[in-house]
Length: 296
Image (cartoon, rainbow, N blue to C red):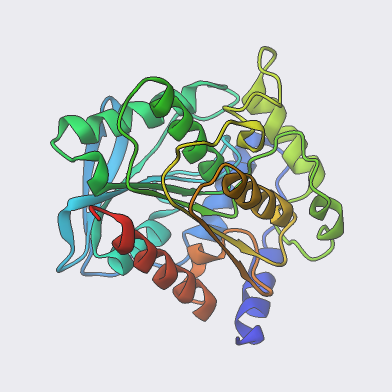
């Protein structure tokens, strides 16, 4: 692993001042994530996915019948189609499938369950478009990873068919923030810290939702009967324990789960796969995992 690559990325992130307001947080996220262009041969098409703004992507030679539904990170309060476009399109290319990224409603303007409602609407849209559940993967990073597991619970409760598999990158699955790594990794994580998480959780929960609600903290959920799951996390993350614990919980419910820890990597590092060899390796692993389970 080229430590110089991750050191250079850390320097780039450190050069961007820490935001103080919600508007600044949203601007900074795009400033540090959308720094690399999408590959020129990727076809991007806007779409209304069940009333939710979205964007299709398709790489040359990819199978348009198979789809990754991607739910971006950003603590439920920031993130956009633009912020994660490079990561989403890279994942689609690696898996050889089409992608559908959605811009779900954000907190605090739209607290829980708005994001979950939008994720469900987008999944139903795919089914209505003729995609069989076995042809769909659902995945996301950070809050998008937690939202993925919330969507799976919702689909199961409503008797809807579950997708072929799930992909969780640096998932945030415990809005009580009880993981030991939140303190242990604070000095090495350049992005995610306890005070920031507290603010994000408060915005998403609002005044009516308890932080142990399994639809906001899937760590406390019944995870039985879910599809195979790939969990990827960097060792330099305050959310390391979230990923390790959710993998353990999935396994405890007899789920097929793979946990991959990438040494020295920071939160949601595949976003910067053009700059990080380990980002490209993570996407290659995810692509192979999706191909194994989709329509299998």
